[in-house]
Length: 235
Image (tube, rainbow, N blue to C red; front, side, top):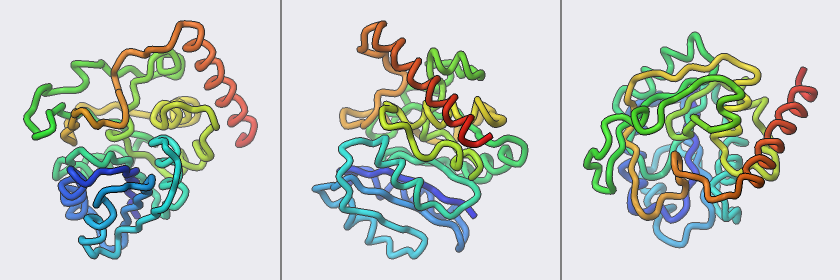
């Protein structure tokens, strides 16, 4: 069973196109878990208009945080294979098929993607060329190479990653570090989604941090301690 997790907030502009790219790739028993962070536009109404029993909406949340909005979605998954999904991208028609083929051997897989503008005009043929992926726990602790919208992983990874540490700033770096510390990961070359960049993006993946060096070091020490605690909790 596949669980697709989407964290939404005022996503009416793009959410229909994203869901339309996902549903044809899912089976009857798969699910799309949507956690909404108190949208004030027509996001929920658009999602409901699909009238698809595979879509499960958890609304009325007040997180003011895409990180903990994603965590909320992940709490409800029933599937063995979990796909993270942003509200404004578009999946390639073979995304699920390709990711599942790699998940036979690996516990967490990250794909490449095309970078587009808000109208899906390609402005970068490969995200990997903008930010070359690199495996390894220590290298990803220093600089994160995991991008949530390009990730899929097994339930065993989820069981380690939840709950998120209270001060984690990005869900993808935390899940990526958990996978690096405890499981087998793979960056694959396939471009499996159109990664839409626009003025309303919730995250600034691949952007430079505005934090001071002291704060960046302190944050990485926090992540390292959190991983060590998780290791003692589960092993």
